[in-house]
Image (cartoon, rainbow over all chains, first blue to last red; front, top):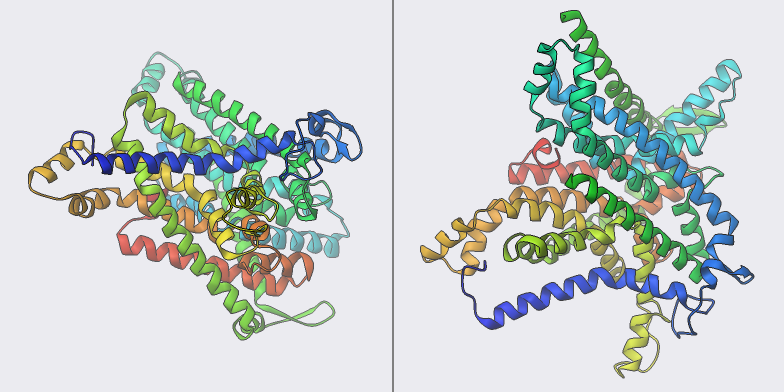
Length: 282
Length: 285
């Protein structure tokens, strides 16, 4: 079934039609979300009541646009803050892990490697509750033992960051390892022969080489954190990130405001995707 | 020099060990311990299997558990069947720029949050939605049809949401298959189906396994899609966990549920790796 093997015309046509259908199926939900962001109606559904920008810029009830809707704006800020911290942490630890597994042979290496992969096969909601249970025990223990009230161990931003970090680090490690494996180690040795210390050699030769992977890992981590739902749901406190806020609204019944937020999300993530492709191409 | 290397080794080892022990291993052990205790008074607990017994004795819990497992397996199979021809097309039928563009188009929807994708299906499927209106306009039905809040809607959402995680590993493994091998198969008298069975599928096995594992995991652990497309009573196991933890505040039973979900996913992933002779390092790393 490859181009060099002739196939009956009907088979070829059917195959092409299937591919077209598949891409329509992929595009359909996103297209309707985008289109209904401009519907001049209280509900994101038919009939079409005319075109409007109100769900973006509207200032009056009932049609308050995204840019004037405080709770949504605040939760976007919360999400962005969490995502930046999670990405920084997971890229840092991921780089360290990549060097560890790439450069050192030690006992339990294989075991630790499998352990490092495990967060990927633990359901997100289970990661969330296990961290919730453990941190509450720590907080209660501290309170009973010393009378110290540690707010950061209760559901809230810190726990969300830890929860997301716990599995995004694995992904960052894999992305960075993949590039580090292709690095020619003799370059580093040459730098050291020329008198550089190990740290200087790594900082001036290896890290710049890893640059695209570091940026790639950062972008992926950022998106995964920004969009995370399952783990976050179990750890959320009073400051809800965007996905949770949108979910609560969706349960109550949706307005095209949600479509407008979604459209903005689509635009931003496509932009990030483009940035990443440009970086990887270099 | 040696001490410097040793120092470097321990500096790199520390974050890994801290991360895995504090955020993964100890919390899971703690969750297991919590699931093993029974409340016998205010702030008083004793070691018991009561929570697991509750799980086994209450038909609703057990049924939801099995239902979630079966539907996740089904979603994985459907995703595989839909994704395989598409991946083959991208990997083998087209070349160059078109190949890159099609591959990218597969990725695009998944840069957007799952919430947005699910919301899209909600707009399409609901009573006042696009498909219902289209069917009425086409004269196929006489009144509005509600297509939300049933198992088919959940299945559509799950398959859509996991598609990428099947397509990417499949395209990667299929790309590494040399065209000449397929041609040789035809030269030796093989037919389309026999070549698919004898050459293409065995070669794509690592991709099939890693894609299936990820899709299965994502479906099993999904909360958003069943909750939104299936409605309040969609009977998905993660909803039981959520309601025990957040609504009923019964952490002991919730932890037991969480542990059962963990065991179920581990057993199925392990079984899948065993059956196909793959390892976790090879399929994930």
